[in-house]
Image 1: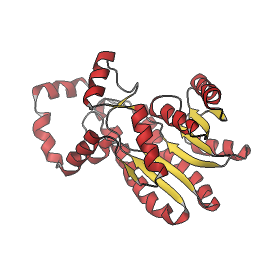
Image 2: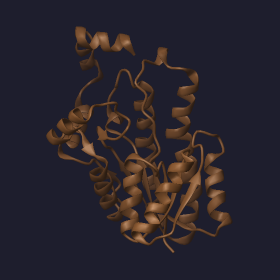
Image 3: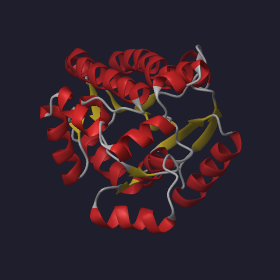
Image 4: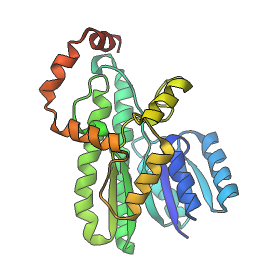
Length: 263
């Protein structure tokens, strides 16, 4: 039985990953710290697609979260063929105004737990001769982003980690695909429905369904990188080429200064 493990699979892009993998006939393990949502999503997937879908509660910011998740699969004799590291959090604030506990959580969620999950499951995949891993980075990995410095830095870590892991695993039958979305229509953004529709229609924001679809296409093709959407590709190129000092004049704009002062 083919299983896909999806941390952060109860909402947002993770939920779309779960739906689209289930539609392909894959059995799903939905992992998040939302117990009721996990159960609801697993039941919906089983009913709609006729697959085995298991809810697994886990606080992915805990130091031993990866070991607990891997232990769960080992105890049940489940061999995970696809690992989609999707769980994330977005917090708008300047570093000096960010509670230390929040910093610890975002680093654990974006860096520590995904790294350990990859270590555990990639080792098992390599021993069996194959598997696929998706790592969700972000367009913010390529340039400084004031007010989300902590978020962007963790995504830069995932960018570097995913690219290095691709080289390490390429000769062992395990593909690694890093995904770099820009703004996605998820609960991360506190926007009105009207504004969401406007941003989606002009391509500034992408739907979770579209991001997951493009990312899975890249994963099954064995590609090491996926930048979903034309505007996102353009943004990535600009961010890559733009020197950091070019942000300084922008930060002096009164409207921008007021935003920075609020966060």
